[in-house]
Length: 304
Ligand code: TXA
Ligand code: MG
Picture 1 (tube, rainbow, N blue to C red):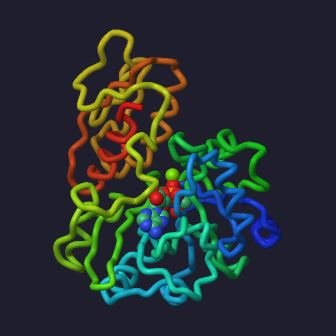
Picture 2 (picture 1 turned 90 degrees about the horizontal axis):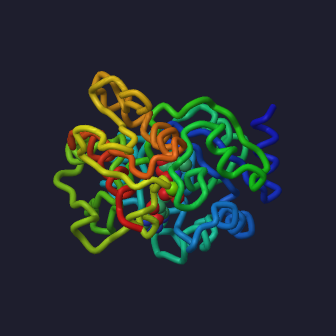
């Protein structure tokens, strides 16, 4: 019922917040430039950052992008799931150029969350969706967070419960020659990607950058102090591998990286709400999902 209504709202050029397994998305009809413009307005984005177009799967993705063999291999392995592929955009793609920020490339993802898949099926076309947060705020991982952040700026919020993963998707760029670059770490780890396509480069060392990956993109209001073994006076503490200290939070008491990723944004919001000027964060190991968690934390800690 509400899925059908959500699809109708999208067809009419409206905005629908919907759950994915990574974070909530702020969705619009990808083919409607006016609807896409409303996304930027609702987010209060300083620039027209390119958006991810959500599709049911590989067949639909191929109508929007030229997918080299490596891209098809990765899609076959990781779709539907927390994985986004940037590749050369086809001229005949229905996705509005505004959504691609005028780039020659397009970002595509097939999400696995059942409600996202039902919405894609009911709507019948690609849905562009950035994370459902105001620009500069951390991504929303519950419908309540999204509604609080975007409130009256959207037409409907679909509630699919808390996001299972809690971190934005892994983004890779696949060049025409098949070369793969990691633009944003996420739940699909570097090792899983390299097992399929061989050694990959990280965007931080190369020329390609996801335009929306400004250092301070994922920032809470408080300053962050990373790799902190304990809180200094006046600081709020975010622990890992230990119980939360009094007045603090834990990413995972047992040191579980999957649980830590799922808790990250809610924990940052909660500690931000205490009014502390500084959030001290326990050391997080850099392997597997830890690479993505450390990436988001170092962005949130960047001076702004
Ligand atoms: O998990 C996710 O990916 C969530 C859910 C809703 O799908 N979406 C998300 O969207 O995180 P957003 O807009 O917050 O981040 C998308 C990132 C931005 O950093 C943007 O610059 C990059 O993808 N991006 C999009 N199109 C691109 C392109 N053609 N080339 C390089 N980077 C691109
Ligand atoms: Mg975002």
